[in-house]
Image 1 (cartoon, rainbow, N blue to C red):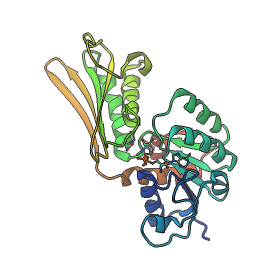
Image 2: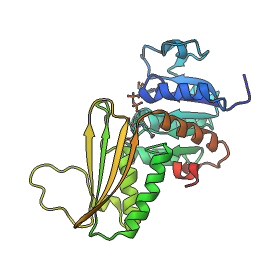
Image 3: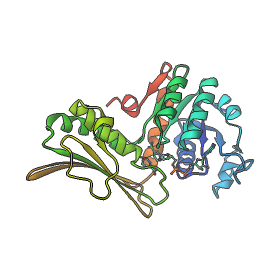
Image 4: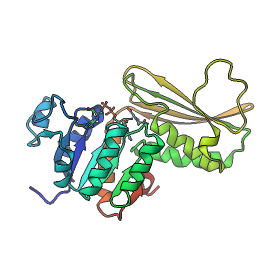
Length: 269
Ligand SMILES: NC(=O)c1ccc[n+]([C@@H]2O[C@H](COP(=O)([O-])OP(=O)(O)OC[C@H]3O[C@@H](n4cnc5c(N)ncnc54)[C@H](O)[C@@H]3O)[C@@H](O)[C@H]2O)c1
Ligand SMILES: O=C(O)C1=N[C@H](C(=O)O)CCC1
């Protein structure tokens, strides 16, 4: 046992879970304090290092999140909305920082997370990478500088297994454009065009989603006017960027008061 903050990874066998475990184990800044998977999962009871096909890590995968959270200082959670809501209440009970990367949240999920943040530090972002959070700030600036003669379209591409659309990142970018323009995103978002849609509404923010292959994550914010276009782009080629950001958030969260934060707060952008 060391003095390093202990971190629990939920959704341990997932694409992000595996990346997070490797990132924590290699970091030298935190220790892996637990790994959680859903009840009935084949990894339950196994050493997580061996389950991932490598050397033993000395941590068994459990389906008892509260017991794991009680032994940790932070929980990093990239799972699914219903699981994340449950983990938010349990992390608050255990007084552990909860870093949430899960996307596809509905308003009822967000309300429960907000309630949990009255008692615990929660850092939540649809994208934990430095590059995307910088792009969020750039999008807000460009949107504030250009009027509604410039149509805003957010185009995103992800791997074939992604279950939610638009991506959490696309919604962050759309939100940034709406804030830059001083409008509510809900009032201007065009999220699904099909058939005879009619001409584009002035001032609306459109979203398009591509799904295929092993694309890690690509986002364009297009500002299109008559005769010219400005395109802001981020391309992710390695999930390590999300895991590094999440670990940074977990360490940053140790010094904060209860509340809900995002990666702009963590990165000081
Ligand atoms: N914020 C970011 O930077 C960022 C980056 C990548 C992915 N994501 C999001 O993270 C989430 C996971 O993505 P992924 O590609 O790793 O998905 P995945 O399907 O590969 O992994 C999800 C894991 O969660 C586990 N899980 C589900 N319910 C559970 C429960 N009740 N208890 C314990 N484990 C449970 C599943 O068994 C699975 O192993 C998605 O919402 C995705 O959009 C966010
Ligand atoms: O692979 C995913 O799923 C990703 N989800 C996040 C999103 O919805 O924006 C971040 C990029 C990868």
